[in-house]
Length: 612
Image 1 (cartoon, rainbow, N blue to C red):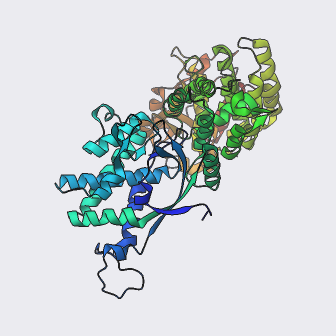
Image 2: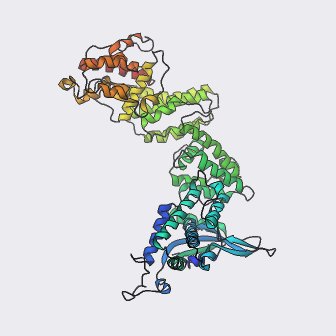
């Protein structure tokens, strides 16, 4: 317990007025959080029959009064507030820490009040004065003021609507999300909780006294905001309450001038709530932005926060973002960068056009493969042609890294560095761009040529099947996409092969096939030469058939890759593109698998940017 902390009951807390500062996060507690809190309070003071517990040491069977029950207390933790005085000389407090708990208790007393009103019972002054009281202005006029003022005007409307009507104001009730929804849900939960446990008015008034007088905080009051924020950061540095994004928000709002604070708040909400709505953790964006723009290195959330707090050559890093000490400029620059990032999450170029190679990478590396976004953030200023070429090389490069079993932390160290280099290339400077590609992508892929050939050869021989099914599907999809170029059909996007279950991996001969069980080992069944892609319906129809039975089904397959196994359509391949066409087969066995898989392996070498 800090030496300067005073123990204070909820009733004592709400003798004062509180304002939630701009740098705090929104109200995030859910019904689950609120339920845990109120059940803990109930269990502290009530037994399993919902009767007040006697004080410690009392005789069994004693029926205690409220005063006796209040010899117990429920400690809610630390509360940090900063004293301030308004233009009417009225004192209030900025609520620096404990805003989630204080807001939840305010909602609980709103629910106690609302339940009593529904029962047409009188609301005790204890409850009313915890929520709202009259204050006198400098001109002598008296106004009613709520004891808690949220950080945003809309949140204040929601809280006041809940107090007065028991509901969110109609203009804010559609498509609720975030703090509005949480406030509504917690209030409705409390109404249900009170009806379940304290349905009688006398019991409800008793419960109000128990919470108001028996629940306590250790409150620290500071005289200035900077001291309060220092305490606040020290508390949260120990893992309590806030995330790194909240602490960065603290840094931004704390440095905003009074005249621009409302703009900064509005811009920040747009940045984190709207632009980054598709990113579960907004810190991921900040990581890509800072690495590509400044550091050339990936950082943990803790180090990223330290970067925002730190300085470079005597200048605050946070002001370097926009080369301005104005936080509205800083947030404006972040918004512009996040607009590009939001496009990249949807696999689009800086101008908003779909980029197939961006879509392909998750099918190669899995949905957790996101390191390529370092590069895309570094290249967000390039024209669409250069950006598209970068995505193509990034896909092939990642293929080489993964197929040769290089550790992916190689990407995590190299891509941020390269992103930093990309920032120095002018928008239309193809010469510098191609030099960059040669230095980093082509040189690496050339150095891996023998390893890639060896992997594909092993795949072709069934010695080293790819373990991840999604990566096997990616390899087959790239081959199918390449082969499909020889038809009059438009080139299908890779996602049509890889996404969902439209296409499935098909073993030309499978373990339950009429003739497969005679000679096929598991390695042969999984080898590249024995695999193709077919639609889901066709996969069901041909399962368990012999090769001879599959021939008419393969002839009507959607993909040339599958038709060519039996139809001879692969003979029409252009020699300059694929010198070894796919041959048709009238029977299927180890020799046929070996011939087909070598053709596919050689084709793979051409697809992934390395000469066969």
